[in-house]
Amino acid sequence: MHFDAAVRHVHRRTRSERSRAVRQRLLTAYEHPDNLIGVLDLRLKRRYDVILIDQGYGGVWVNTVQIFKMLRRKVRTLLISPVKPLFEDDDRGDVLTLEDLRQDWPELSYFSFVHLVRGVIATLKTDLLLISHRSQSLFLFDLVGNQPTVIYCDGFCDPRFALGRAMAPGIRNEALLRELFFVLAASPPSFFGILSDPSKSFALLTMGRRALCAARENWCWGEHQRQVMTAGLPHLNPPPKFVPPFIDTGIFRPSLVDRTKRVLFTTTMHNIDKKGLPELLKVMGRVSKLEVHCVVRQPEHLPKEVRRFGRRIQVQTLPRRRMIEAYHRVWFNCRVSREESSPVSILEAMACELPQIVSPAVARQIPIIEDGTTGFVIDPDDTNGFCRAVRTLLEDPKLRDCMGRACRERVLAYDLHRREDEVLRFVGN
Image 1: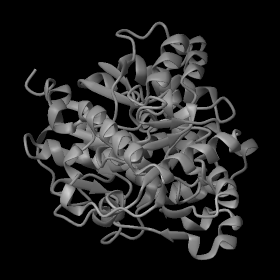
Image 2: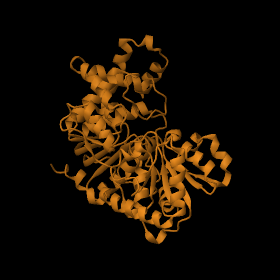
Image 3: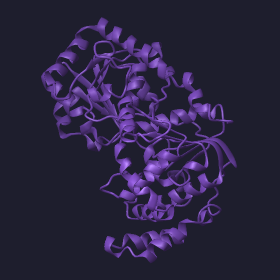
Image 4: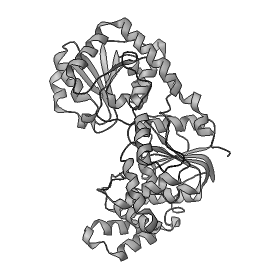
């Protein structure tokens, strides 16, 4: 495929050698969807009611898959991502992933996949394009206005998109596409997304802003994120909306409950040091009876201190079915994060009657969390307060049960089956 040869050529060039001719060749190669569409047998329908696009990473991806499973029972839905759905083993239906395509075309690059997706979006008709992670909107910034689009925002650099406004009048989309393709070509092979940050490129901020402005609606995972985004981008019309993750509260089965006094810590992210585990390990050093079930997707990023606790901390990577079982067997959940935007596992744990010990960073994003009612809100640097909260829940089963019931009662408002119309209202209009 000649476009991949162009990519390899660009990889060998330094930034000072980015000639106009090289960039023009990249743009020319990617202006024609037939370079890929028609070469690959995609077996796609001509029309979908909803198309979901995700970067395939973290709790956002887990939640996107749940939305997809909800929608595909009602309407024609296509899911697009670089990677396969996490922790799923059922029939996935209409799913387009780079991971699957590479089984037949191993040479297919992420760079090529982005072009393929652009061609698919430009060709297929849909009532709703739901970009469930904001980073992916950059790849489609010039296509967002062609169909009703919702961008689910992730909390990264939201106010900085305003910086792109100063550049917007003078830069044509074609010039921005050249920058986009170069960034992709110069990125690692495993690259799965783009961060809109001035340290990368003001052009990327401009693309991000244009996508947000062209979208029918912009949603935010967290309430605090909505506030920050609204203040930083006051010109967005309509203003950003807080739309919490769509949670399957039906995962709770009272017959599965068999709790032991072990604490759950879980994250699918790589930045485990920001998600509250180091703080929890400090508490383990002070509370000798504390045992932890640590469920992570990337155990290679665990801090070395984990080893000194031996059998007191069980580290696992679990498929979704067993993760749900874990929610029914632990005592409470800890997530004293220093940064947070889409804490899906917290809401799933709440659905299974698990009290929460969380940080203010988490509580600001999830309005249903309340200190003293759904658990405790603890500053990550307050080790003494963290120890008190842990001891209180370990030593008072009645309080644990009361807080657990409060968690489930509140999270029912986020149940995906009660909220289908938040997405389906776009279909047929």
